[in-house]
Amino acid sequence: MVALPLLDVVLSSDSDRHKSEEVAAELILAALNDIRHIERLDENLAPADPTDFDRQTVAIMRGMYDDWARQTEGLLDRIAPLERTGRLIAGSDELRHAHGRTRAMLSISMERLERGHRDAVAGRAIPIEEVRRGLRSGTH
Amino acid sequence: MGYGLELTDPARDGLRELDLWLQEETLDELDALAATPPPRRRRVGGFIHDFVRSHEGSIYYVFVTAYRDDSNQVLRIDSIGRFVRREG
Image (cartoon, rainbow over all chains, first blue to last red):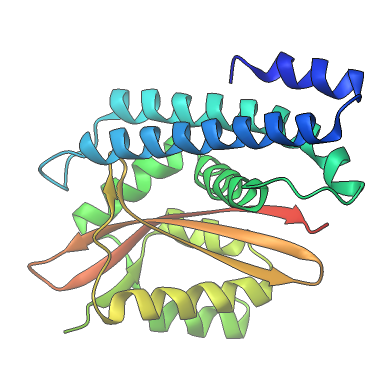
């Protein structure tokens, strides 16, 4: 998202509303392509043995997702005022959803992710029926 | 053929951090996920699944990682995360 300053320039001039919409839509498309590339890389790097957990690779991938999410927040912040004036920016809903999913994924700490995987592989888990009972009785 | 469904302690910690209504929604979603077929999307951190709910002017994104124990036909949820965005 190296072109983000371009959007600032176009927005500050405000001489051509269509130009700002087009530049914003182009940057959204670039951001969506970026997250698709990251997700494909993530899938391609999944270990052949599902019991494996490669902490270093997971950390690098999370760093890429985090960089993308922060840059996307910069873009969404700039688009929001345009949309508040009633302008429709192509792809903005799809980008917000991709960002939401990514932030939900990153909300799981590395430690929790690793411990959960270790417990799951070792079979240390309780059946969902027990979780439901606990939820309803307020003790889970 | 569906899988059994279990949650690890870290997954239960993640579940507890959700609003009560979303905890129920999440358990329903996980039940459906384990029913058939079990998840096939896999990344470096394990199998993944995500879903979205709208509630009282906010959008809730929930992200789940899981381990598929094919030999015992059990889906174990590793961890649960969430992100909330105000609509509009």
